[in-house]
Structures are given as C-alpha cells and as structure tokens.
Image 1 (tube, rainbow, N blue to C red):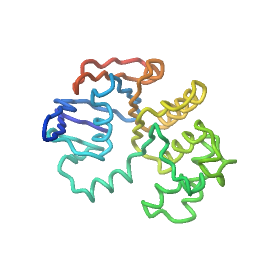
Image 2: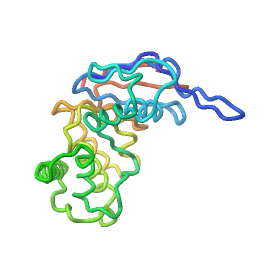
Image 3: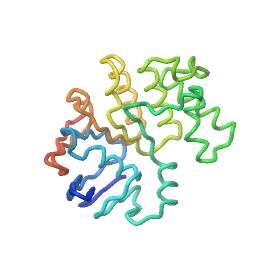
Image 4: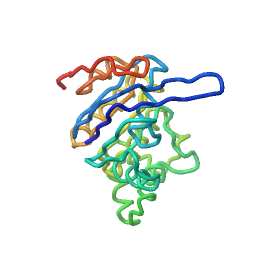
Length: 226
C-alpha cells in the first residue's frame, strides 16, 4: 500500500549540508505494523514526514495506494493525507480550547463529512479508545495517557488506510504506553497499516517488521513474525 524507492533528503545552511536520508527504499503492506528505529538524528522523523506527504524528498519515488505521488501537487497531497492517513504525535497535538469530541472531529471537518456522520464516527472512535465518558472534557482535564488515547481516536476516526506514529509513547509511563500500543495493534487487526518511529525495543518488538536506520540509511530489516 506504500512504497518508497531510493528517496533522499538534504538540508542546507550557509555553512553545512546535512544528508538526512540517502537512497532509502522500503515498502509497507496492507495491515502491516512496521517499527522504525535508530539513534537520534538518523532521519527517522524526516522519513515519517515524507511517508505522510508532509515533506517532499529531494529525489526518489513515492507510491501510495498504487498511485505515484512523487510529483503530485500540494492540493493533491493534501487530499490524499485527509483521505488515507492518520497521525499520532509524541506531544499529542490536541487543541487546548476544544473538547475531546471536537478534537477528534477535526479530521472529519476537513473532509467535509456531514454533521450526523461526524457525531457517529466520533462516538465510535472514542468508544474504541475507552474515552466516551470524556467527550466533553478539555485536554487540560486529562492525564497524558488519556490525551494520547484521544490523539489515537483522532487518527482512526476517518478509518485511514495508514497511521503514522512518531514516538507515540515517548511522554507516557509504561502502563499508558502499553495501552496506546494495544490501540495501534487493534487498528492493524482491522486492516490499517501502521508505521511507528520508536526508541523502545520492547514496543518495536510488537510490530510485524523492524527497520533500523543509521546516518540516513536503512541498515537492516527484521521480520518479527507477529
């Protein structure tokens, strides 16, 4: 469902040129859980941004759902993100002034979903993450673990084909981190592909496949048999 071929990404300042990614190729299958690991600065987040169509590579090819999007317009990339991709971030990225339900609803508003369908989908998503009783609360009234559950609900509310998770448990204690991992695995069980950046070996081992990055290159891929 997702394929990148020999992509590269460089960042330049007046003094130095940094090779963030160099000739990276990988595929993600339907309903596959892939963990990306590597030391800080190895290109993990850059790769995730490119997979999520938030950034463009300097070279290479990107194919999403059988469509070559390497040279797609910004309008087309936005359409694809809204239709097919959900995001979960380490810092939750909830809007403080909106209720839990309103935060989850945001992705549907951007897609032009009707009010009735939005209500039904939000209720279902919050139920899936065990947060229906918090629908009218504000993010500041929730614990970190609860906020990340809401972030997962926001990611799954539109039934995306792909979820990209950037250190989704990085700000959580062990119990809440495992709960979020359970939710991601549930999404995989329902056919959604998940690509997760993580520093946690134990959580990476819950994926189907582990990809190791070093200095902007893929140095190993391990099938975990999950």
